[in-house]
Length: 280
Image 1 (cartoon, rainbow, N blue to C red):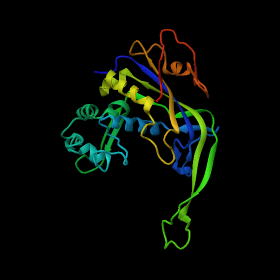
Image 2: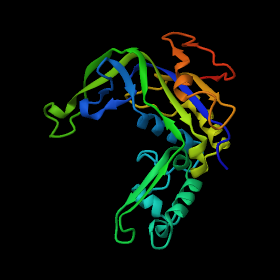
Image 3: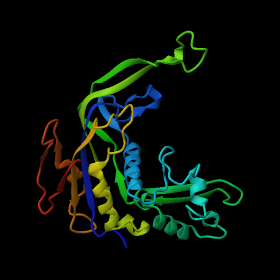
Image 4: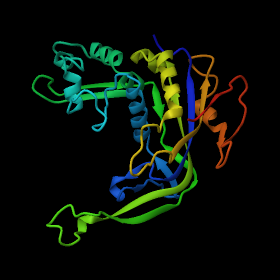
């Protein structure tokens, strides 16, 4: 089974007094480009999609350390696990053909058949195995529709993390950064031709569509308080064929995001109307 029709999608979300995606190389300040527009990387967005899918009970290969449910310490350990993965023989080229491993991995893990995966493990048995899987679901980075303002606040801890506690140490001081307010948008596509390789199908596409409006649920942290990131609209274009009625670029450009409700204007495309889903 594979995807019956090409699909394009877009998600508009709002940020208020939160850090949607900190840059560890810049003091964890919110990411911005050289023009001052806020950015949330595609890796960050796919992390949230994977987390929401995992919460719904779908098997996920790339689990974050703070949300892993199988106790595996690494991707290699998970992949080679007899209980949670495919077993060591699946990554031994002498015993298992790469195509068989690809088929088994895509069948087992939803994120692998959606986003793809590179199984690149070393070791005596694997002999440096490298098995690439190209996924049919692509997700772009999110960018704010206007330049954003970053507020930085100096913070202190009430106790010292080091020393005898008689005086305040340097480790008690820190900085916290936030986006005061911004509207962001990201785009994505689902390719039927690539889905034939991984087995990504219409049911899988529907599963992702259902979790996009809830992308930031159960995702709260000190940097992202509950309710500070909100999905406003999800746009879902389902073409009438596998090749698509229009290019993804033309479909995405037909949507003009705005900074206030209803958050968009739409240029109509003949024969292709999006399903518009309200955020939660």
